[in-house]
Image 1 (cartoon, one colour):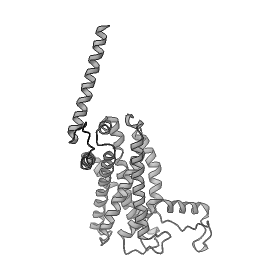
Image 2: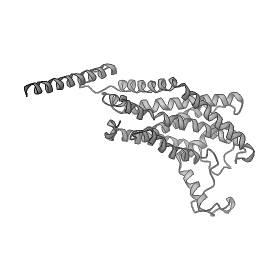
Image 3: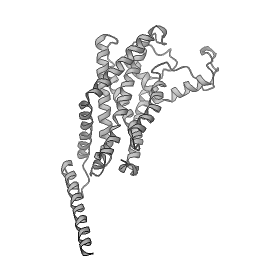
Image 4: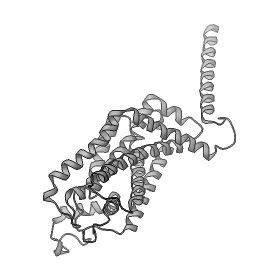
Amino acid sequence: MGYKTAGSLCHFYNAVVHVHAVLIAIATSTGFGLFDMNPISLSSRFRAAWMLARREWTRFFRQRNRVTAAILQPILFWLLFGTGLSGSFESAGGENFSQFFLPGTVALIVLFTAIFATISVIEDRREGFMQSVLVSPVGRFPVLLGKVLGGAAIAWVQALVFLTLVYVVGAASISATFPMLLVLLALIAVAMCALGMIVAWPMESTQGFHAIMMLGLMPMWLLAGTFFPIPEWDIAGPGADASHGNTGWGGWVLAGIMRANPLSYSMVELRRLINPSVDLSTAGFAPSPMTCWIVTVIATIATLSIAWILMRGSRRVDTIV
């Protein structure tokens, strides 16, 4: 009996020593003492977020097939759809389908890259890396910030590379609105990464993440005026305005959903910034630039807030493997 008690105490002591060594290593790597009673400085939290963002970049560029597919897939989409449907489409602003679909292709790059970058949350949890990060003294906000900024930066750069190719081949001309275009793309990328964190954080498998994201992502993209224009809509119901025809209740509901989609406002402003010479005033859905920016900023803040609340309040998912 004495030998068993001594053996149990020995195992317990070894476990305590191991946990203590891990905690000290974490404290040393983050640059501040774990058992320091002073609050963690803001600069230390940002350093932790920066390291997580750099890790996302390193992981992305080490996967060369992922880099190649991320650049070539949108180009193929734009060339195939733009060429195939160019003769059967004309928007209210006088654009052909290649010009109309160009902002949608840019949005497609940002959406898919930003959201699917957050799939690393599930992989990190499965490998044990996420649990090690969560027990560090910096808290959970740097984890959210690092993941979102890392994925958003990757999506933003890919969209910039695609736009550069578009400008080089002469499919569009660069204008004075280009800086504002980059800012808008950054906001969309951050919002989509935050949306991906909302879905990925409670997920147990990458298969479930793909199923949920494809179920919601493609309709959200299609219903934002990327592939076809947003039709006229009257709150009084279908047929209230006979000048635009009567599409029935199905078309009326579809137009209402498209107008309620926050991405629709981002797409209108994206189209306005890429092709500033196009007159969108005659289009069925043409909110003012101020409205588009306000909706985009509110959507970005809302998705970040929901992601932060979910990460801070959900402790059960910390141990999902």
